[in-house]
Length: 215
Image (cartoon, rainbow, N blue to C red; front, side, top):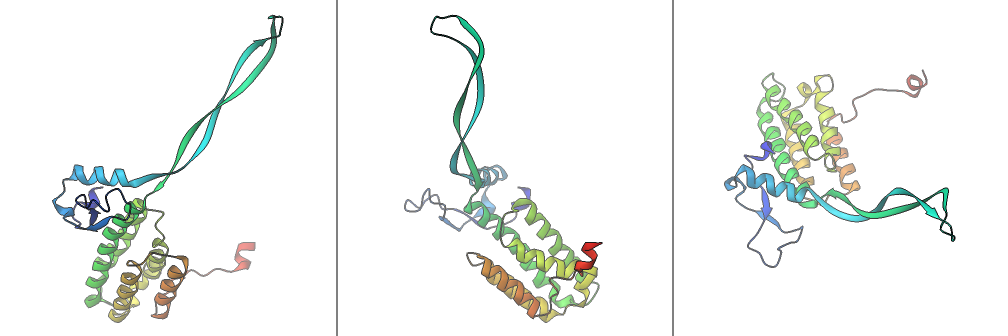
């Protein structure tokens, strides 16, 4: 949670009676004014939601008696069920974490543009790569990571980041900025990765063949 200490992103508006209790009630607010404990408590409360209940149970054994009350050796088993909630990451949590990390990534892409093709670009490229990994650690189920991983591979594989121009980084910023503003679907992911390819980012840099797999 320490990674969120500097962001001024989105938290529920506690003053809105209309949206109170709704998962979609997130607005721009003074996140920086909240204490670390308040941020941690809020994120913990939004991290998971109960999706549905499933039955789980334990088997118990007991001796029982026949009609004449004489004990028998056979063991009767009974299954006791109780409900156990299935939890999943809430949409509020996904949006908060996504807003924080994509802001850092987009800022680093913007910063790298004047230094594209030079050794000085390495500082910002490394920041991009490490932030994507931190994002994965905090919110591994966010679908936008599929696009970010493609961008990661295009930069990291054999130091290909040294070959990209300022204009290409500018286009990448536009593509990633656009997808962060949408409710992400599979087709959006495919379009974003294709757009990165179209501006020259090699999102599948690894070479393999079926013959290699057979060996």
